[in-house]
Amino acid sequence: MSQPLFNQPLPRQGDPRKYAQQGVEISGFVDLKQLPRLAAVVTGDSTKFAVVLSFKIDAEHKRVVQGRIEGEVGLTCQRCLEPVQVHLACDVNLAIVWDEEQAKTLSRDRDPWIAAEGPAEFYDLVEEELLLSLPQVAYHDRECVPREYFESKAPDSEAEEQPKHNPFQVLQQLKGTPKK
Image (tube, rainbow, N blue to C red):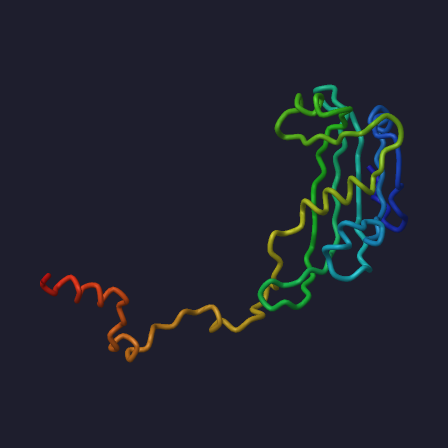
């Protein structure tokens, strides 16, 4: 297998079933500007993702696409609300199917990629996989907020000494008075 080329764009479309029959491998980069849903949730727009997709027929005689997608995106740190760079890397392991019924027959270790006959959009596949690999919470690896903000302090002793006002104290007094 030759070294993948990431100095050229990934082909936008292709016939995944034909590629699987022929055992085709495609590689290239995808610019974040070409992925509008992902671009809406990350910061910055100069990111490029390295993509390698291998199409083949597996041991179960199913057409599959396997590969890897990698790149850096800017997100907002949920501790300090400043930008943070996050490395995204996801492995692709999909079976190419015609419809939902065929997708239900797949083994649990493989997700479906529902593709109609003819050319399919590879950028849509890349965008879906990247959206699924986004972290639930992004934060810096370093300590970006002082630790004292996360510590709870013991209550003041003065506050404990003062008697607390009980709104039901009046009812207790009424209950104790004799009836006439």
